[in-house]
Image (cartoon, rainbow, N blue to C red):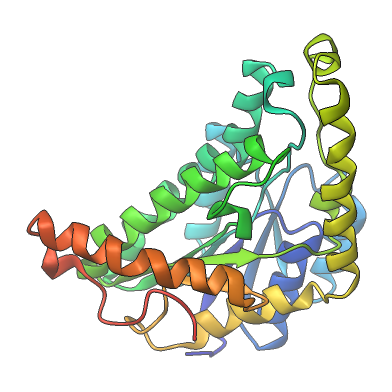
Length: 290
């Protein structure tokens, strides 16, 4: 699938998975648009380093519809987009009750509404051409619940539901959807976690609150053993696969526990489409990466 004429857009490309992905596609000869929030000031160094690699940097804030519209218009003016990687995200961790609704809304605005805004900007062109791939970067906790991760995980559960539903609706129109589920990696998102903002509520949890350190310790230990470039490689591999043959979910690394979860749910999900007389929307390929 790779050739110099093909174009990929990667959101949240100032660091972590997004930057790794933009650089991976550029190294393979793709035309790459790396979208970054505030690339001229806050992320000026990252933007300059990407541009030196021939990557085109575009200012885009996923929580701002006008910013998404401007960025998409500038990118599409240069030609069609073959692959969209919805990577931009944030991580809010802590006791659920101790987050105010306003802060939870912020989490969903970045992790759920943001990708939907960006996808809506590029999907019409893909549908018109009956060709394209949209990748959603989720998380392994987009499939199971983890104490102190309820706010973040619920945003990823919502993202996965929207992405999977879109995969059925878009497949007959020639557009593929893929969900990548990274485990713990030492990226900026894990190093800049947002905690609860209602300290009075948090105090009411007494001996429960310190247990959060166990979660963060386990995540840090797992991250220390992994290379974040694995996620970029998985995304690039999806882009290189033939259209219509890409798995819906790809856990990275391909750990047995999350793979087993995906395997267990897939037949139930398939049967639900059959029960609603939607068999023609079922994918012809496995629901997960082998």
